[in-house]
Image (cartoon, rainbow, N blue to C red; front, side, top):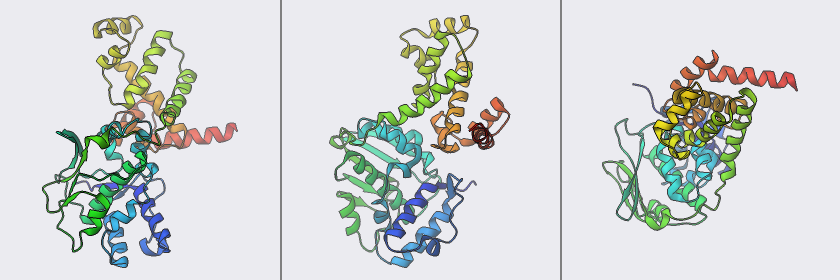
Length: 334
């Protein structure tokens, strides 16, 4: 069975916490993770949290670590959240991109009568209390930071046994906290979901799209109508709407009419999608803003391996090697 993982950005969060406590992260944790690695094995993350917990010997370690969370610690999830107008929109994106920060049990976001439920099952194992509380508290703290205010979580459920002291959890979450539950779950009120994000920055993802569009114009001259379809696909791919129907809807036409017009231009929807994904990939890889795992998710691939296979098919090189080669070329040209 493949070991589950957490994003290396969480390690940076833990390191920052240790520094704030006046501790040397290298002495406490030992060797730092590979700076080029997007993930660290779950077993390593569990071991590091256990070391810090044993050192401090006080409840609620994950809650304290979470206080230092920022959008950059959530990688592509953070980038996408910053482009949303409300917390509800940000949570909708969580379900798609959650695997970029935590690939154990997937998140499921579903409506409830008075709000929304975000739930993680146990099909892929139980990482333990320290891992769970750090992940859940980080998500809640990030949401509070984005909205610019403290608000209580209606209910939080953990699959782990009740700790000796539960008051820190009640204070942090502000609502009902349950343990020994069947699934890890947070329940948010509808009023919270409509809160605007004070840090909303549509320009952030717009900048990523502009980088891609600049490369699209650079690498491939196509008829204006094909260029229009391709540019429309940029946000659709990011939103996970990679279907002919979605593209037709965006251009206010029928699927059959769009198919006919694509054929008239000597292409197909699949070819258009592949070409657009390739150029988007090249645009993102040319810059160091995102790592390969995040780029794969932004392009609609559920697994980095699938993206790597597709990119190798397009260019003959895996993404990491292509990026290094591209960076060498840019340095030589400068």
